[in-house]
Length: 296
Length: 285
Image 1 (spheres, each protein chain N blue to C red):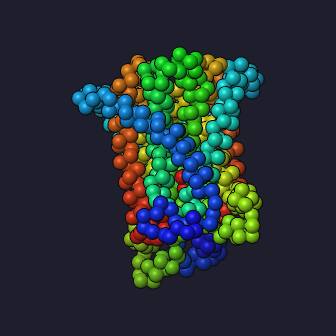
Image 2 (tube, chains in turn blue, yellow):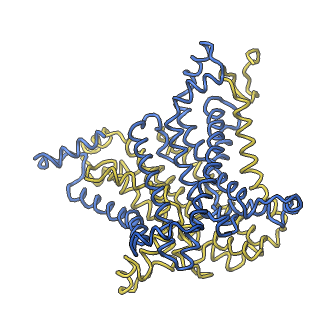
Image 3 (cartoon, rainbow over the protein chains, first blue to last red):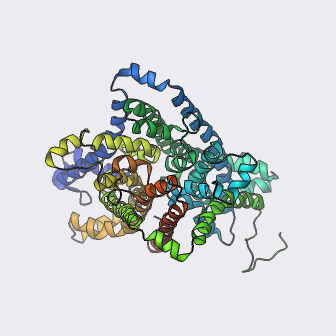
């Protein structure tokens, strides 16, 4: 922020004559800001604006009618259900992984960290494919599952599994650098004062990491609700049954039902906006506690 | 536990903190169950194909073209993102202008906006009858339904990776370095190009690699804008989906295996760059 002070000093006062040696010429500055703003407008602002304009193209009446469609409603319900299952699972995993990796020194730690990041470097389509290969009718497990009447693919369990796979690293990635930075001295103090392991976790560690944790959950949830590729491969696209909101957007769009597609898309865009607002608030208020969260 | 002496061969160093076994147990079982078993299933299925079958499937002309399109467009998009991402990060770190905080928050939009929504929105903008496409089509420029459209979608998807990797490193730059350069007679352009940018190079490289890796695997935002013409604008993930819908599991497996091998090689390179940049500059990128 110290940089800002220098720059504003240059642009506000009459000090332009003795331009600070560590800032650019005013023309260069405006050109760069202009370029950056154009780029943001072209690639970020306009697409977002397009979603809302296209959805409201025929007025708010049709927008609401389209949204009250039972299939859309089923898609919203399924999306929420999947997130409600997948996010807590990865939350527990993320805390466990961060506890093991950040609070202890052991062999193979770097390798374990790399493995946790693995889903980030796998295409979403491949994330879906691995479950098709595992549970599909041509697989080893397929016939056994079929004979026991267990449906995983083209049903909710498959969608949840694919979503868990894709959102696997989010919470752990936020917590590991944060907890590494905080060290173990707080926990050691609590333990030496006679707290049990769980008490130490609940009353010392958890309050220390709560904002970073919330941040990770926020990102995890956004991805869980918005995942498309992986879910698309395992869902089977059964209308009203295995369509999540992003899949519903695709189906409506491919049927040239653009207003309906964009209406469902506005709900997802609103989710994204809420996520961004909460994320910025968290960053502003608790930047010290989520210092490592800038990077993904 | 306390009686044990620290030795080189010990699995973990002694600590008074409890819960190591539980935490590592939960972590490993979840990791094995959700990630490792499914991924090794893919490895097993592709090795079961046999080398000659695998090679024949992987070198199918349509597969090669799809892989070339995926990697080529991802590379182009990552390059564009490096240029504009660095400019954007610079503007956000160094300058003050109205709406800066909103722009800063907006950079994360591609992380938060579901890819399918991004896909249909970008298609609406850049289709020949769209907001921007209709301005360009009289000039003979077509973006949507061509490989350029794929690049545009991947620029959207990859932008935050570059900005968010470079931005924190830029914030850490010590002003004294620039002052020293200026004192020694460097003009502003020389200071930036010879002093500041080389220090940012590892972060920029990491951002590039992350955006590239993400672009290669991207599916949701691309399939709407690409036009999906086989051999021309069909990306590898889409070809996997098409093969799956044909119940051609061997072909889908082979394409996925080739993509994964290349992706893991890239992950290795990213980690090497990070280790190198930490050694060289004392902070991670």
